[in-house]
Image (tube, rainbow over all chains, first blue to last red; front, side, top):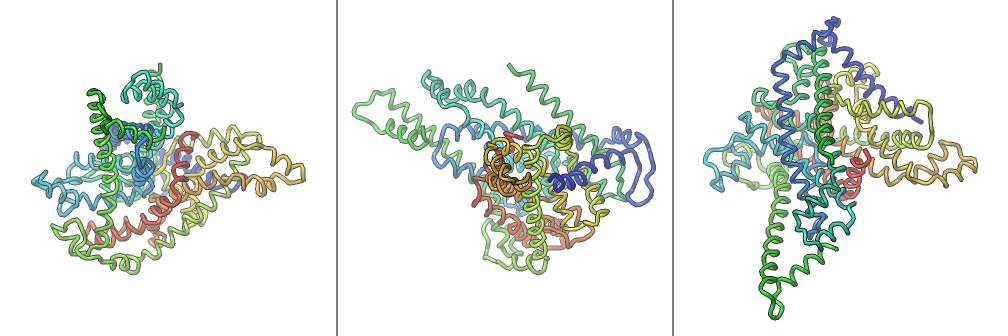
Length: 281
Length: 307
């Protein structure tokens, strides 16, 4: 009874991991015979300035997303936890972007962000907030900020929902007695709700971090790493060496990059867990 | 205390009762102001979430010359559904749509059967090596080479002779199965074993007990995994992208739209068709989401809390 799920698992989840690690020690274009190069690919990874730039971009993207997404999601979850009219409807609307394909979201926003005739520029110019159209995607900093904004737009709903699900397990008596003792909303949130939510919040933030570090779809369709590689994240950078090479595919080198990316994700996750553990009471 | 009741209390404080103490009335006004501000913020945010989608949709029914002009305005000049028929016929979207349906169907059906069996076995049997298997599951989940694995996945599918829609489905399944198996396992562990024991006594084998007794009992969690599987597969971009690089006929809707977008950026095709295609890719999932939203919500919250 295990066979139906173990076969695809072994073929498409387990073997590819070993495959990548193995070929990361070879130079190979995917067609001719692979040549063993030892740690050569990894030495090249260490020296590859563009790669480390994409790692930095990935970290900036992750940091920017978290800084905006997590507080906003927490605030919304708390508002719904305290109760508002039409709460269910509002939660549905906020969550909706999350169920849509990130690749399609990237395409639609790419259209709305256009410099000439783009809807956002039209609105901003119509309101006389800007004189010249903004190059949302044509400038390195703006492109990263645009990516972050769209990422927040798409993901704030899921984080809100998860925080909300954590909050409704908090016994009502606790928040009510806080109210009786004269605690305002902020104090109730800060000293009653937030400490009790921390176990859930830690997991939610960890899942977010890992997910953002592995971003591909949205970046690929919204900026495709542009302008000129400025918004390349780890996995869009790796993808090129496999499937969109300038000359021939460099499978061995791409595999080494993939392994390195996995290590980067691991290091960031462990560092995050260290930090939250240390701050535990 | 429910939201509606809380709100009405606020109203009562604000409505001036006979000779109210000054302080109370001022508090009431402040509370009203706060409530009003909050309502504006919440509704504004809701608009912020919906407006990009609405603009995208408007553009998808606008005539091409409007979209490409430098001052197109926000509303369609005229409602032009020909973008959709063009995408459907000329841009081969009929084919892509069918491909999306096939892949999603295979993933969901296969996932429901295979993952429920595996989850059931892991919950009920104590196999030798089960610990090791579950650890390996967890390790592959956290290693997550994701995009980097596409190349070997495609090569392996080719050598197995399934570099086709079945291969796409199996690769997608391999990506989602671990979480689904864990969700099902946790759910089965929460069920009592009495009914299954009774069936066993009556001569039902292990598989028979699974099929006749346990599977129907698993319905709530299976609805969750079906919804999650549908979303993951319908929206998947990377797997069909790589499988269709050499064979455009394997494109799903999502990949078809993105391929058309690359052409549009280079001036080889029209943006209105791209957006019509994008709407076609979004509408099914939006409809499913609206109809089954409580299962989406439950699926995601359970997935994170237990996972």
